[in-house]
Length: 385
Image 1 (cartoon, rainbow, N blue to C red):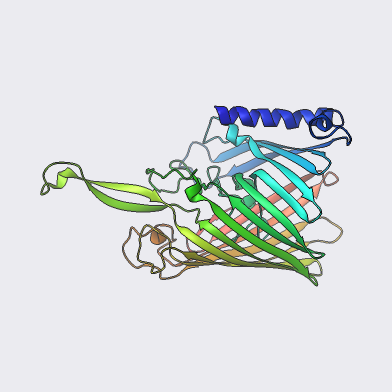
Image 2: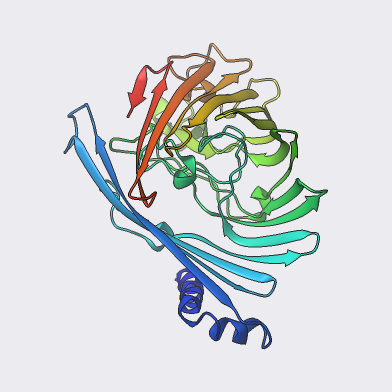
C-alpha cells in the first residue's frame, strides 16, 4: 500500500505541473527559471481474430489509451507515462498496469543522469531486438511485433556520457530483477508450472550493463555488455523425504522450484541507410553459468541474431519492413527431457527462427495510422497476423 501511495503522489505531482506549467514547477526547483510542461497522448484499438475456436470468442477487441507528461525546470526533467490497455483475459486492472514509466533526468555539460522506473531500447532492430536485456517482457496479452509495448518498466539508474560529436556511453545499474511474465492458463499460457520462486527484489539480483554507440559514415554502430540474469525461468527438480520410512516411496515428494540463470551478454549492433532502405543487424552471445551444459535447470550458452530491412516509400509515408530473429543453443542436450533448453525449444531443436513483417499506412494528415503485423515461427510452424 505504501508503494502504491508513493506512485500516486508522484503521478499527482507531475500531472499537476501540466496545468500549472510556469507557476508550480519553479516553486519546487527554483525561483528564477519558469517550468515547462508538455502533454502528449494517443488512443488505439487492437482488433485480433483467432483462427481457432477453442476459447470463448474468436474475436478479441482491446481498446487502449496512453498519456505522456513531461515537466522540466532548468536542468531537471520529470516524465510520467500512463498506459491502459483492457485485457479481457486478465481482469482486474492494477496500479502497476497503469503507470508505464516514472523517472527524473538531470542534464550536465558532459551528459545526463536518469533514475526511476524506465523502459530502455537497446539494439538496432525495428521494434524487435535480441540484445535488449534490461526490461522483461509481459506476454499476458499475447505477442506483439513492437516489443516496447510489451516491456515492464524497471527501477534503474542510467548515466549517459557524450563521446565526441556523435558517440554515447551508457552505464546502467539495476538493483532488482524481474523475469519474463506469462500466463499459466488461457490462450497465451506457456505450459510451465506454477512453482515456488525466489525473491528477486534483493540486491543479490543486482545487474549492471554498459553500451557504446556512435556513427561512422552512414552507419550507426554499437556494442554492449550486460551482467545479470536471463529473463526465462529455469526449473530445478528435487526429491524431498517427507515421511519416516526410507523404503516407502510414498514418503517422498517431488518438488519443482524456479531458478534463474546468471549470465553475461556480449552484443554488437548496426544499421545503415541504402537510399530509401534501412538495413539492420544485431548479434549477441549469452555466456551462462552452465559452462559445461550439464545442469538441466540452467540454460546453456546461446547465440542470438537479427537481420532486417525496411522501406519508407518516398512521398507517401507508407512504411514496410521484414526482420528475421533467431537463436542457437550450444551443447543442446539430447536428454534428459526435463532440461530447460529442451523445454523452451520448438520440436526439440537447438535453433529457433522467427520471421516478422509489418506494413504501416498513415492517414488523416499523419494523425492516425493502420498497422498490420505478422510473424511466423519456423520450428513451431505457428503464425500470427
